[in-house]
Length: 376
Image (cartoon, rainbow, N blue to C red; front, side):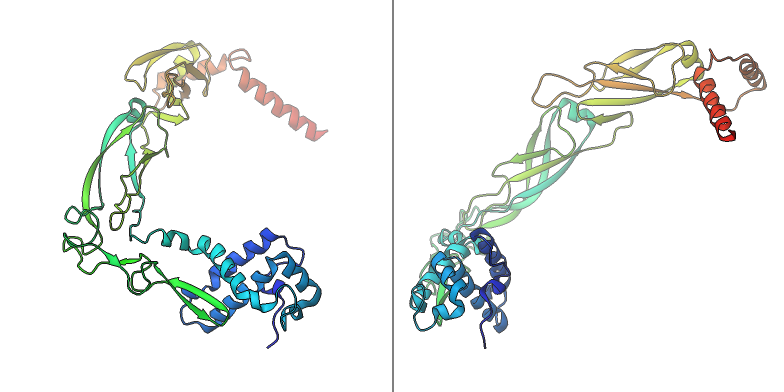
């Protein structure tokens, strides 16, 4: 069967640079790697084809020879070293690339069998008042903790894990296929390099057990919705004495019945009577710190008028300053009027002028101008 063009195999243009070729190889190798497709002959063929193409195109001299002579450049020992040096070159390329893709370097480093524990997430809802003042909260969560019987080793007390006999403690098994040398995770020790012949009866050899813990979390004043707090080393315990992961507390703020928050500022909507809006007056509003303050309303105030109360908002995180509080008034239209009230309102309307209702008069004046313009 005729060989496919190496550029076609990797799915790149002939003008592709080294980074583009390497990136294409990574994606294809991840997809077709035999470890991810066990027993699939087509995947194994494609994997070999991809590696052969990459070994040539990653090397400047080999690529130049291939661009000039095609596959003939590597037949009968011709070209850049011929096929005699191909196996060694490929082995080097294989390790360079697949250490990154499949964590081979990390697995070799885990010959002791120790693995870091997973990070954990905990969602915590707090009130706006708690976000204002800060608090120390207690959270309870089930998680994996280090086994106290075996101190996390996974082995029965008095014994130790021993090197894996299948891989000699490396965690990897190599085997040759033609001029390819493939390396796979040792199925006996799962890449750890060690095995436990006498597992701990308390944890079953895992080195950790599931247990509910109670932790204290300090929530600083001024935190916002979505704030993340990291507790280093408070996540899951690692396997067989490995380091613990981290715990991330994600904060959410419960809706407040009076205030809305935007950054460090607070907003409050206050309904006022038509009389207060027309004649002026004042009202009292609570503040987030538990106090009260009075707001003066000038006569003739309209719905939407906003009053700013400086330094009455939320504290700024890691700062001594505070945001502001904005009070917005909404004029309430009276309902269920008595006969006398209706009479008074009609009397008031009959005596209204442009001065008493300038916005209404101005709007309808514009309406008339618009209609007259259509007639013209």
